[in-house]
Image (cartoon, rainbow, N blue to C red; front, side):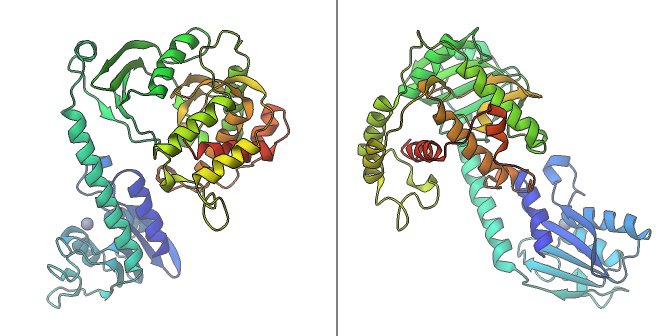
Length: 417
Ligand SMILES: [Zn+2]
């Protein structure tokens, strides 16, 4: 069942209802499947059908006698029918599906004495884990649908509306940003609260244009306290895409190249100062105004093994200010903010915190982002466990020794933003 859950997580990562299935013969898995109904636009793409297909190929027979099928949710009428047709011996299921299940809920196709084959059924195995996964999925789906509805009704400034006309768009869900990102065929519209970061992003996009591969600004409008930034799309792939994640050596090279490129920019006329003397003042402002997101902190930052509260952390940050090695810093150098083709950066996005700062700020956030993505912390990568990521790779590519004190300092500082 654990392996069936792993399959279900693949569906989850695709935004599909998380249902997974495996078929076991003589102690070995001979077929796996997960729900891909929307992805494949196919009614038949249920987890069980896919697993049966694969198992039949492996067995070289449509009869799956002697097999046990594990599935995270009670099968529907189609799958229960296929299970009986395939003469599978036993079905082990986690949760029941009172609205559509045909393994005991609405019908019990699996155990009907009238058919020529009856299946042995076990119910409730790892039920809690599977039902929590489903509950979470539907909770997130409701939030997503609501947000999309709001966005589709959203007021857009005249100039922006003219430029995008009636072009179709998708709403981007990757990353953790609080802004809304609308992806058009060749353009991106970023809508966010008009604050210091929105102001700085626009300023830095103009400043860096021609110096670094940054999006081209088509329009920037401010209306009703919101910033509407219409930009070109970056070429290449996001650094957290599977192809990169599967090639940690190239990914580290890409990220290191991106950093070196940033650091090569002459900062004498850079319009944005992000040095600690200013950053700590902004952090103080965030604490005073309740803008620190305490739900999204690294474990042990606060509480028994960490700081009492954000104010105590800020105090510590003031007292332990490191020597700054000033460069042009991205300010949020994490994988979803970097685009590349092979090991060359083709785009830097989310430049709201970019400016003059210590180069270790970028190294720290890059290091943390690599660990998070490889550690499977994000749902986006939940179906993959990448094993051969070597933490020293980034430093090797940068040609510098890791400075853990500074890395810890900047990761802690980031908790206040
Ligand atoms: Zn089904």
